[in-house]
View (spheres, rainbow, N blue to C red):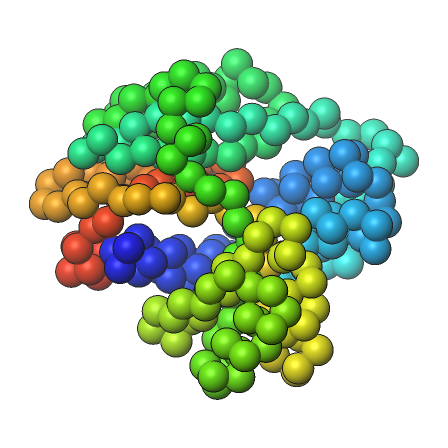
Length: 246
């Protein structure tokens, strides 16, 4: 898992750089709209919306943008109608890939995602072809904290595991425990970088050399697509390859 964990850390840093450029605003806005549409506009009663708002604040999205997105989701303001879709496929080396997207045009998006897979040595598969290889979990990321303190607080609150990669800690929880564990961590004065639901591979596929480079380029291309919210893959790539690419 070392290579996969390293990539997660690189993605975290990249997200912060994207946030500085405002590139992530569109994706966060769509998440807020969908969350508000599905669960209502009150973040106290809608955990998904609460997490989306926290993410928006973490990337310095203006308050008025957040409020406008919520109103678009609840129907108070007119706007584009978005739907969630999940794509499944394989990358170089037989790596399983899950792609979460929010789109206003399903036909356009699937065509563009298929093209990205093909261009980078992968192929888009049928629904269900790789989802069984992943587990749905909550992940809370924290940095600049005493590891023993974080471990004690997280495990006591019901977390399943705590891992660390280059100063960035990942607290793994069951889906239903995510918000409770986050609140417990924050109650101790520990700053949470992010709290989100994710897919964690149950096992990984080792990929090296040219295939590894192609795979990372495929994953980056998928993540750069405007409609794509999250990309998950069950690979293990040598750290030196990741370092050279990042």
